Image 1 (cartoon, rainbow, N blue to C red):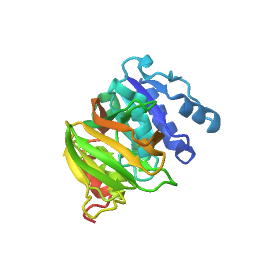
Image 2: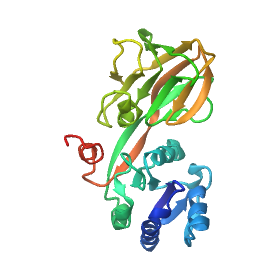
Image 3: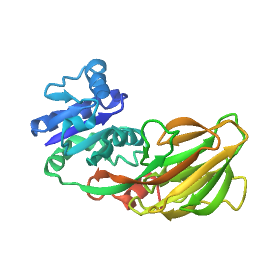
Image 4: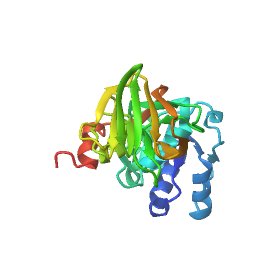
Length: 287
């Protein structure tokens, strides 16, 4: 079995659990490729012996067909792992060494005990919708698993985001910004801005204004098979476009098209750790 591993570089408190996980994977006969930054962190900073573990090439596709990718960290690490995996649609299992760990339901202290499940493919998977941003002004990755945010610069006044669903005008959002979230991202920035929690596999997306300058501007759920176009204007010269935390500055008047990407992120998780249980355990739903 071929396994790729990506992780954050703040793993000192979890060194024993990670060493145990790697040892169990090697003993089980897994072929392991590890992202270079994590490899260097474990080997040089923490003194791990990584015998039998290969440093992954920069291009994920160069490793061939990977059966499973392990993401060691928190939700931010999982998003970076998804960007690393890219269009391969390799299942990603989140191993939590972060805080909330909504996308990483397996505690690192239990990861080694889950190795037999990993090797036998004994885990559940879910397909998660990804957003694709289309604009000639956007550089780098144009995909987001959680959300796309159009927001004012720190020193600017509010923006006006003129939104269309297909060719039909929806609204002009006068606000500090506009969040377009996937169901996976509904519990991230969207939730803190007053948007709804949505089941992660639902075929929808959420539009949530940030500090709207009108009582009539409320979060809205629309079908994810529609194309959303947003033209941002305002008194400033530019605005921020952020995809899963990756920000760029675009000139006012830029039109941004947001649509469903032609691939999914496959989330792997232990059986019994799906949406309802995560709501109760991570977000204290019904507490």
